[in-house]
Image (cartoon, rainbow, N blue to C red; front, top):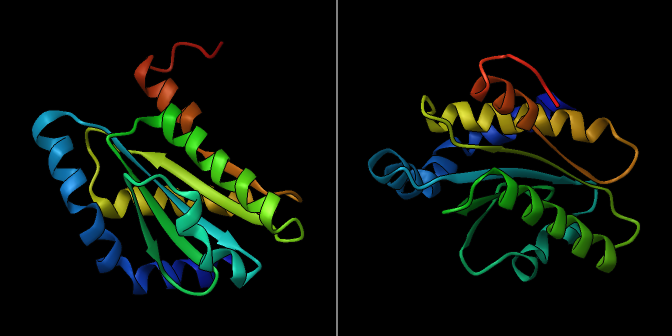
Length: 154
């Protein structure tokens, strides 16, 4: 599946994902409670069917089609969401060892609207799909540079 098809799938379901993110965005804007989102793609449709078993009860799962789904990690910052996404990939690989699963992850920032987060997550998913193995790609380095005013990376 190419990135254009993923973009069309995500855009055709944008309202569903934005509705699922609405309360998390409100909590962030009002109280500063962080949240994160991951967009997952699998070459196997059977992986999407079992995603609910691998997510936490506090996560919101939005199935977009037979190969794509989003997970919204409420009250979860970047590091915890990255770990949760990796755990989902690990659990899926244990159950479906021949399936390749890729994820693009991002966390909310002060200037975000849902469309921005979806675009960043999709961009990161495009990088993850290019890898030979299942992986999670994120924009953590970009966030780090912005927070440190582009001074340096350790």
